[in-house]
Image 1: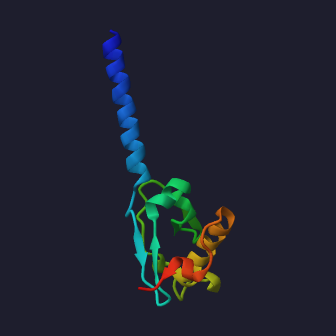
Image 2 (image 1 turned 45 degrees about the vertical axis):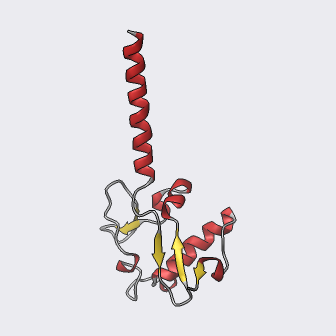
Image 3 (image 1 turned 180 degrees about the horizontal axis):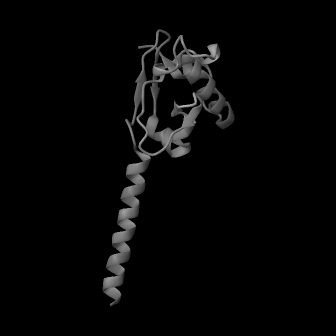
Amino acid sequence: MFKKGLGVLVSLMTMAFVASTVLAGVGPAVIKLENKKGTVTFQHHKHQERTKCAECHHEKGPDGKQVPYYEGMKIQKCETCHNKSFPNKKLNKPMKAFHKNCKGCHKTHHGPTKCKECHKKK
């Protein structure tokens, strides 16, 4: 009886570990954002360990308001919404949205905030 219970416990723990590893590693591990100031190498999986997906990922709801990330949401390119027709001119380019979101978070958590710390020339 004890061996059977132990086997079930080990199986459940293994499944929980695998599930947490898979969920933490959704999407590409690294995203390279090419830019004239230099390529930004974004460590996607490292950021997933530190923050919620909804901090960066969202979509426009039927009422035009931002809907935070939810399980199963289709992730679109930022410029799908953050473009010339975006109503807020401070966020009408992906770069503006990245700078507002990333720099704000980096200031709070003591990450890089200077241009050359993220933008690397080849």
